[in-house]
Length: 84
Image 1 (cartoon, rainbow, N blue to C red):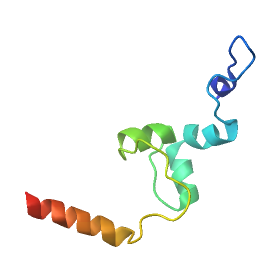
Image 2 (image 1 turned 180 degrees about the vertical axis):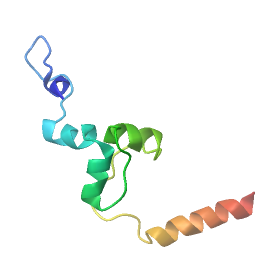
Image 3 (image 1 turned 90 degrees about the horizontal axis):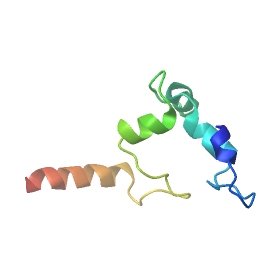
Image 4 (image 1 turned 90 degrees about the vertical axis):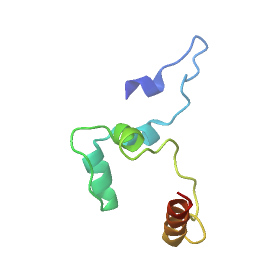
């Protein structure tokens, strides 16, 4: 966590990431997901599980999700399976 505040030779923060943002990502995945009401992986950092287990490579954008939400995901999967 202390690496978030590393500074360069000019005294500017190298990573320009708020400590409060990083605290959520370095927290144990089980605890982070419990706050969302979902199951998590005990003993692994939240960022690691998001990247390697859930195959997530970017933060979600603020605001509402896709227009159709879950239905859109189901349709995309169905179309992909039919194309095989």
